[in-house]
Length: 460
View 1 (cartoon, helix red, strand yellow):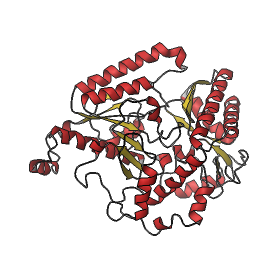
View 2: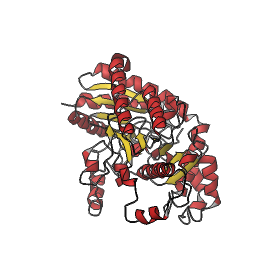
View 3: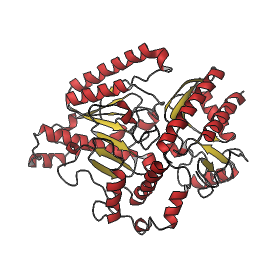
């Protein structure tokens, strides 16, 4: 599908190599470059293969933390650049809430709303995933307080008190989130993030309730009773938190990404929807990682069979911009309630328009389901052959993971894999996660599995 895509990984130096390390030394004088894996040659990278500045060609199943929908330098995106399709967005960056170009309205109507989750009538665009969550929480608080006022506008006393951080009732509002959840790093979203201490250390946070995530054990058929009991305990904790009152929202990921690729059943999520409806709080589904096709659907929550849709659905990463979809009742009655200067990025939204066209034309959601089934079968094979290293293969579409016996071994496997040409990522305490582009094909899956196995058996 991608002209000039490499046929396989090729490693010429250590990874990272000398050119990457020289760039790190320069970069590190001004910014924190310690987290950089390699420095990428953006022009030479193609399809599923990342090419670094040392000339190493890596099969990339991590894709910038799940952000690359069509692989690198997809011909339709390049053609759109060369044909001038994006020219309207190149001359300046508009404040979209003040003077948006007409082309942006077309994108909202024909791209964003074309793939909107069922039941969502409105969309808010921002730039990042954490902004998406931050503003979805604000929308939930606005709706909650409006309902508490009986639909009346805020009083003059409310308006005066809020400027002093003393508006009656708002300090008591809460958002329920789950152990292991990740929802971003800005201060509001960070109060709902529960995955790693490094995300939260030394920052003030809201005293919001946290409940256990059931975290299904795999294989599912061997742990059916255990998983059912864990979900029941989690739902009991959720209901207790909701009964305590003042809960404006509950936020949950369809699959906990940063928390270790932790899953729960469709029954569990249907029960959450039921409980949030009964207790009058917003049900926010955070699809920043899972949205955009990685599970073989545009939205992972579509697989749950909900009788009533979520109230808000956040997105970013593969969608190229951040934002959230919402139901009518969560659209603020007054302007400027959810607002910032840029309100997204028209150029990246225009790129999303091309992405949607390619996904539909080339049947990429079906491809993801097929590739994901092949990947998961291969991970089961790895587990059978190397049970001392691997366990608990799991996934939906190509949104997949496998556990390693301990954190240290996981990190050594990832490092060894990178040295022979596989760029993958860690997840949670001891998992390896796979976040490939939607253009992953059978040969890429087979190469990924081969490189991962070679890395594991190479460890002393």
